[in-house]
Image (cartoon, rainbow, N blue to C red; front, side):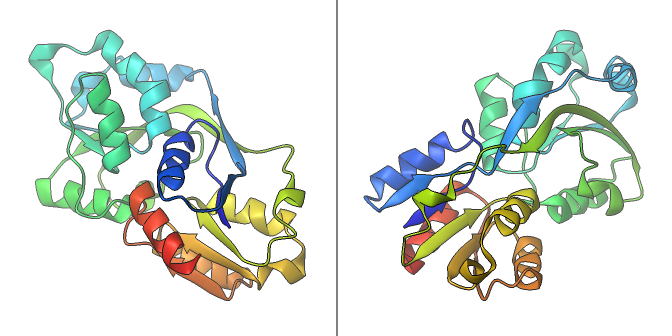
Length: 232
């Protein structure tokens, strides 16, 4: 059985693709996305858009909860380049008529590469309430616009999967991995195959005691599911 651990809204596309593959799967969200009101500092940042030469959206949720603030004040004659961390984020921007580019690698390291290559000096990042990893990967001036929070799911019913002989679990974020570790019986950890969205998640999984962790070719749903089907 394949386990989709994405939040309810973000996991719907994953579910559609899993259904098309005709595999046995379950959607068991480990986290949930909550909109938060931007702080006074965040609003000050966005009201001074002309100070930035780059905008970054770090997730689909950043687009869903942050793009409206950008759209409310941006001027067509002062278009600022937009960098989306991945294809799903880029597609979310496209749906609201915002053009963007993606980095060669769909992660924070990829964002840092683009910043260095293009010589950007100051950027505004639309992100969650946690400090984005990109802050530690570049020396340029970066301001943030936190517009959502990712919380652990309060009620996770693992009884739906505990009797399965083989589980292949899709893990997209470090937070989801940590929730899984906390909720799973210790003896169950070694019997699970993880499909990790990033090298960093795979490395962390080994520290948490998982013996089998496959790194997907990319963090996108299609590649995650492709890797899971091979192991399922």
